[in-house]
Amino acid sequence: MEGVIDEGTMTIKDLALSVKDRILYAYDFGDGWEHELLLEKILPKEERMVPVCLKGARACPPEDCGGPWGYENLLEVLKNPEDEEYASWKEWLPEDFDPEHFDLDGINSRLSSRKWRVLPPSRKRRKKTV
Image: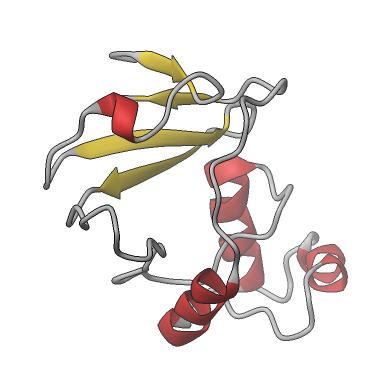
């Protein structure tokens, strides 16, 4: 990792990012989920700040599915109803789970309806890499 920053002590402004800069966010160190974030635009301070998803692919992996490797395994299992793990995964997953579905409008609706605010430093230490 190039640099690790404690999210409880930094704000996005503190990172001094420029348009087109990218950061890598480690969501869950134990499972290895990483998200690459691209700064598309910096809005004037007086504008309402609401995150917007511009594009994406596939459904969000289910929580606690074992990280990227576990999710890849899940996708392989779901392709084969004869797999010994198939029945237990189907029972665990929501009935309407479709790994190929991506709902851009639904995501942005949820993002715009949330109250976004700066949180005080967290006692729980998750890390971001830059």
